[in-house]
Image (cartoon, rainbow, N blue to C red; front, side, top):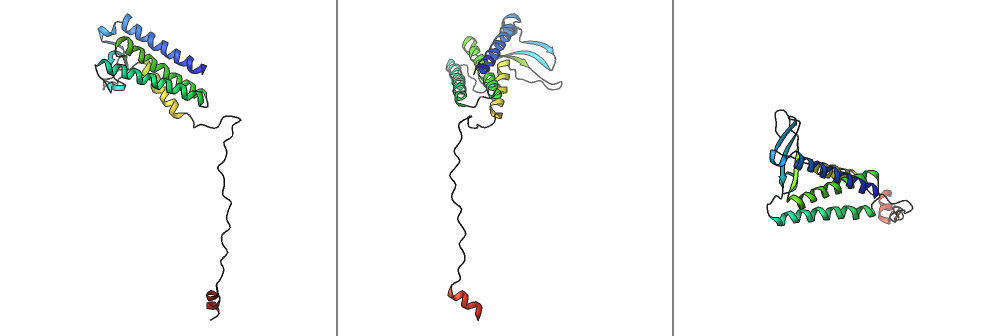
Length: 186
């Protein structure tokens, strides 16, 4: 569990530090756009009140707290699930990525009322209209890692009882009745 906590803390700190720099040092919330490696990587400020791609977006305060609640419940579920799961390195890192990213976005919703998205990647002849942040990347990578985690095997020392086997039945031996025996002699 310590690995999960360390990964979650690292993601949370990186996410919040970058958001602080982007909003309070670079003033991207006022400047709105800064080209870095155009068009491949740019800073484009977007306040996301919903989940990915603005889904469930609403300017009501109620939806903000509903989304905070959902994120916290998911984090709690992942931590509780880890208590009973076979903890591999992939599972712990993936869980840490997901929890750290989710908590980073929870902090944004609590402080700003929306998630601060600022990274934008496009192609030479195509402008991506969406922005994202480090927390979003971590959530996505963590969810993929949890999905790819191999199925549970019994813990060492705890063997799964095999399903009871039915004894093999011998096929019945055909018995010729009197009519069958007599039919072959005529």
